[in-house]
Each structure stands twice: as C-alpha cells, then as structure tokens.
Amino acid sequence: MIKVSKRINDIIKRDRRVMFTTTREHYPFVADHANGDFAYDIDGNRFIDFSAFISVYNIGGNANAAVRNAVKEQADKLMHAAFLDFYSELPVRLAENLLTMMPSGFGRVFFSNSGTEANEDAIKLARIFTKKSYIIGFYGAFHGRTLGSLGITAAKTAQRERFGPFPNVVHSIFPNPYRPQFESETPDELAMACIDHLENNILKKEVSPKEAAAIFVEPVQGEGGYIVPPKLFMKELRRVADDNGILLVSDEVQAGYFRTGKFLAMENFNVTADIYTMAKALGGGVPIGATIAKKEFGDTPQGSHAGTFGGNLLAMAAANASLNYVKRNRRRLEAGVRQRGKYIMKRLNEMKEDYEILGDVRGLGLMIGAEFVKTKKSKTPAAKERDRIAEECFYNGLLTLPAGESAIRIIPPITMSMHNIERGMDIFENAVKKVDGGR
Image (tube, rainbow, N blue to C red):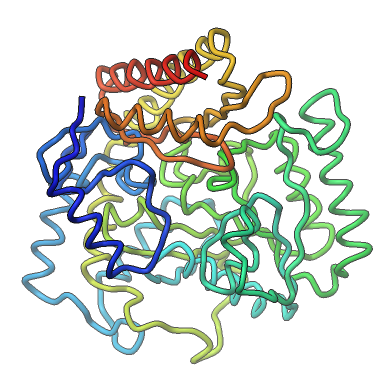
C-alpha cells in the first residue's frame, strides 16, 4: 500500500501556491523518475504505468537508452539552431524518416512543439491549400487548447468556457456505439445516421462545401472517452470529403505511433487522410509536434507560418532515435500491441460480466477505455466512482488516467511486459471490485 509522505504533501501545497490551476488528478503522484514499465515518485514508490504519461512514453518510461543517448549527444553539440530561419540537417533527416512511415504521396512536414500546435498548423495548411476558411469538427473531440484547435475541440465545456467565440468552426456528431445518438440497431446504421447528419444538416444548412476547408477527426476520440467509431464511419467520412472538395485531417496526437497497433491509427480503418498531425510519443519524451501533408498540395507562401522552437535539435535527435527504434522493431511491436490489447480487452469484458459498475469496454490495440456507470440499465455516468477506482489503483501501485465523463483509459507503454500487464490488471480489477461492492 502506497503511503503519502509529508514531503509529497508539501510539494503539492507549494504547487497550489505558485502554479495556475490545471488538470491535476485526484491522487497525489509526484513524479521523480521512470524506467521501462514503471514510474516512481519522489519517495521511491514504484507504480506500474498504465498511463505512459498520457501516451508519450509508448516505448517505455523515460524512453529508452537510444533516445536518451541521442539527446545527450546533441545537447553537447547544439540544442537550438533557429531552424525556421537557418538550415539544419537533423530536422530534414527526421522529415525524411517520418515520410517513410506515411502512405504514398505524402511529401512535406512542418515541425512544432506540441499536439495543439500541430493542429493549428493543419488549420492553416488546409486554408492555404483550399482557399476556404471553415473547419468541421465533431462533438466529443479534443484537438488542443490554443484558440484555433480549441475551436474544433468539443469534449467538455470547461475547456472552452470564457474563450469564445470560435468563428468559422461547426461541429457534427461522432458515432458513440455505447451511447448511440440516433435510433439504430447496428454500429453501421449508427455510422450512416451520423454521416447523413453531416451531409444533410451540416453541409446543407450550416456551412456550404464551397466554404469548408477541412474535416478534423480523431480516429479514436481520446479525451472524449476513448470512443471507437464503426469502420464504416471513417470510410464514409472520406467519401463525403472527396465528394465535396474538403480535406480530411487525421489527429494522431494520442492515437498514433503504434498506440492502436498501427503507426497511424487511421490505418485501422483502411482510410488515408490528406493531412496528419502527430505529437506525444513521436518525441520519445521530448516536446514535438509534426504536421504532414500530401505532396500534391505543394509548398506554402513565404512567411505564412513559423515558430522559434519548431525543429528544435534536441527534439529532432530524440524523435529520430525513437523512430529508428520502432522501425527496427516494427513487427515485434505491432504483434505485442495486438497480444497485450487482446488480453486486456478479455479481462475487461470478463469484469464487465461480474461488476455492475463497469458499463462499457472499447478500444483499439493498447488504446483502451473502461466506462463506469451507476447501473448497466441506466448508463448514468459514475464519475465519482471512476475517480475512487483511480485512487484505489494509485494506492496499490498502478497509475491510470481518466477520459471522458466517467471512463478510465488504459494506455501502458506498448513495450510493457505481459507479466506487468497482468499485474496491473489484477490491481485494476481489485479496485473495481472494492468500489463496486462498496456503493
């Protein structure tokens, strides 16, 4: 059982005195270091990491030796090269490296520092390429917290409150099979109902295709609750975009980089987007964003976009080392994601039969969500119970993170051993059992 020391409580008090309020979790985890499958707090307590520090450490806590050594080596040479004013080889090498992982026809990359910046870049690119201004997003989506990407975000009012209005953005309905928004008997029927809404309401009543530059979509909604759409939805979304001359942007910030078993989560749907955005795991623990577009769109006007730290050499060194690692180990990693994801889903589905509080289980690969409800019949979100489960996990040595209104995301490093996956799931089930039995 984890015990919280006075030292930890003191740091949390200091944090609250000097830091602006953000999204701290209910449990008092004060990070110190990480190593592979485990994260450690400042008292040396060890936790199995089912958070991957928000899907950043896909290849293990504190990345791996190759990434760390690449950063150290580059730090001794030059950390910042003002890449968007001068030339440097490392960003070019990473762009070339990254393009080998993309579908055919992709040819240009823009580097930034985060996922929200990558999506801001995509908004600008879409408007430049199409000479149109409107962006279409989806309810439940999360694309970032800067004003452009926040305009497309529609996961929680707390994220948008006080910051609007958000011009030139409209939202459509993303299919949620557990909470279907239309009367439908099958996932495919739900998918088509959502597509019908997009075509016959959004594009005929709210924004003309003549003004719509892009549709932004997460292949799996992340902050919105780890919602996996029916495959038909993405295929039809691609058709709608093509039929109306609208670009399709795939936000791979959380779902990409083999999290779902594929380098690009959109690959699971056999769909190719026009622009992809990436961040989080791409840098192996170092801040980075990347926006990748089709070669056919050409270049951007001189001076239309830039950023001081885009292409930062430490980030480039880390991302190149991480990318080289996953390329060398691609088959093993993909097989491992399938195996571990299948095991976790099996355990969760068995738990769903045993515990009234566990309402739904969904996911792709190792991007898995477990949603908690008051009762299975009511499907009323059980946010307080979800938080108690996360706290129980913490005090028994397992780190988890919430998603949506009442879900917990299970996103261990894709390199985590089966032994620690099993141990983590044991802790998770014991926490669910305790809260379910104690309501």
